[in-house]
Image (cartoon, rainbow, N blue to C red; front, top):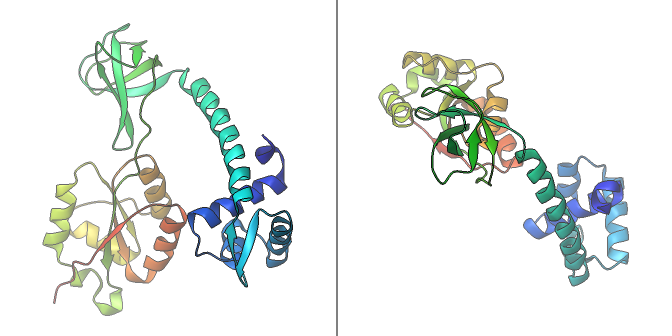
Length: 257
């Protein structure tokens, strides 16, 4: 587990991972992503080149060698075994879920992630046992007896709202926006910017406003769908954050002529 115990090996691991996932990135890109100074990242690259883990393609650009791939492979196996054991420990404990239908204490249940939450229902071939009774929609305590699929990333749809100088909420086709929200009743609605907040209120939706960007990111990581009304001037900051988190998104413009 040197990759977790040594800062040097941790940085090497992250550098190699970036080069393998994003071959087009350069030294400066990686330094920015890892929060390192150009001098610090340069030293790491020099050492990795001298040790044969990476090769120079062009000034500032590198590729991972076979030796580097082997180093990554060994450390990934170690991390996999470590994380697998850790997950077993975590999920050997109890889980709080939302009951789908009536559940009695000691019932065999199936529990799963959906729309950012954990649900449970009575099932003969389940992956847990109910430790408490619950009516439909109530909280129920589950003892896991098997594995379950982790949540997929939630869908993020961004509705671009013009700034107030360009018409703001008055330029948005509210019928199209309303239909989008209605079509995704389980999605969280957040607003970034005052124009976006007013747009949501015009279709009688009170969005999450304070901390909206952070809520969007956390909800999507937990598998919840998110509709983001975003004022145009704040869009680039939002997109940078979503890309940095590895979250996919779709942008819609409901602008009236």
